[in-house]
Image (cartoon, rainbow, N blue to C red; front, side, top):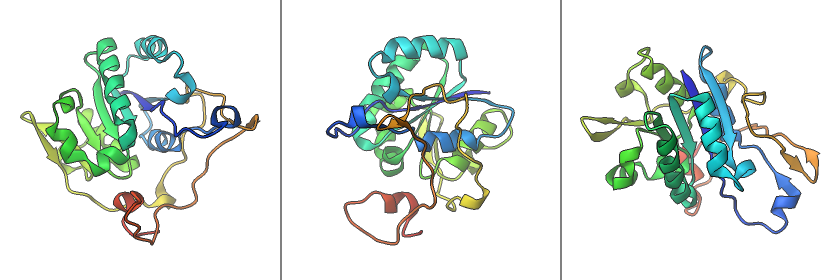
Length: 220
């Protein structure tokens, strides 16, 4: 199966952000790195292409012709995500669409109840590595959609939200993608090359303003 994972072009406006730093999206790199071997996986970080998104996506998606496209979005990026889905569907009407990230985790029922969800096939809630890996396998008949924790999917036109499961065991996850499968490049910090690494997940605090506890619970 051919899979493309896309991160949003929106960034938090920070003074001199564009000149000072461009960091790769670690989330989609982790999800892509944990898809089983035998599948063709590509990453697109649209922060690096946001001055010519439509032309770049049309050329790239037509060349790859993916079966499944995953998009990661936070709540403030969701309008952009919907616009991108509309663009993707105009290029590849038969491609299946999965949306993950914090917005899908926190607002899956609201998303499913909205008319915009007609263009979405799956929602990946919580950590994406294991759920998305199993989703790819299920679409090839090697797993069952109804048995995948944290997955929301459609059955007879209605959304089903599978119950959550256990958090990922970080010691068992594969390394994120940092090779040619990452189609965008040019990441830097003050003109020096930069990469992202993750040493832990979660937080033991319970701050009301923070969304991380909804993703990982009060764990660390």
